[in-house]
Length: 205
Image (cartoon, rainbow, N blue to C red; front, side, top):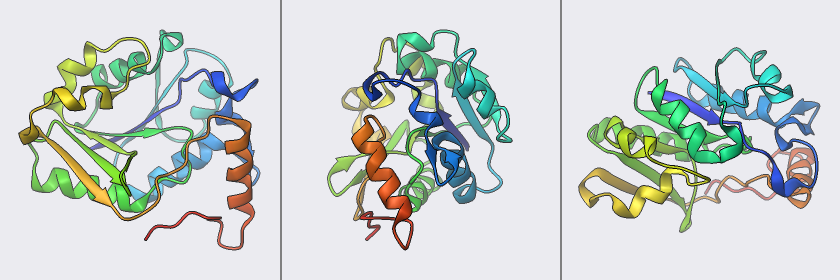
């Protein structure tokens, strides 16, 4: 299994700047996400997909992970998925988003269990109190379909096309990891980081 963190987005909704470089507790968001993923998946390979140039690429190269450049980053998420699939080092892929530094240990554990018990799965995804989230498990069986995606479509756009025998929804009694898309999201992330337990209002059960 390989952790893949998508970090080639354009931060269009932020209103200026790159969200992955925003500081939280003195560290960029992407650095926090990588640290959280590596903490939960110690010993597994970790890859970050980045734009072909710029500060996000430069930051990723300092984080001790494998860095894959996406020359078509402006196209959208599908292009990063294609890069990850073509260069997969150790399938299956456990897919994370670079703007989710508060990754869910429960979600990670659930995806690992799904693969160990059903290694033929094409996709498994966590639903946090009925809200779909990450990380998403992508088995080798779905790789050809991922290579056919285009635009800003993600892996979950294929969910409804998969037979039930090769997909698993895993329900988790926890809040989903919050996205960082807008400055309001950033302010909430800062408030959570400044709370006594570092979690703010996030609850894992």
